[in-house]
Length: 89
Image 1 (cartoon, rainbow, N blue to C red):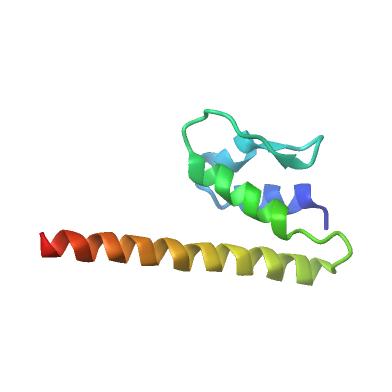
Image 2 (cartoon, helix red, strand yellow; image 1 turned 135 degrees about the vertical axis):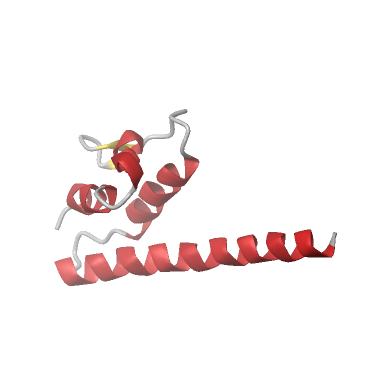
C-alpha cells in the first residue's frame, strides 16, 4: 500500500476530505498551507512520519491507526485538562 493510498483512505473519513488539501500526491508529502484546518495538516504529517514502505499493508494500516490513536489520546488529555481548569474557575 502506498502512502498516497493511506492518505486517500484517511481522507474519506475526514470532514469534506480536507486532508487532501494538505497533501501533495506527486511529492508524497504534506503541504503546509493556510486552508483553515491545522488538524488536517497534523493528520497527514503524522501519517507521513509513521509510513514504512517496507511494511506489509496490514502493518502500514496498523501503524497509521496507532499514530491516530496516540494523537487522539493526547488531544483528549488536553481537552480534559482545559475542561477541568474551566470548572475550577
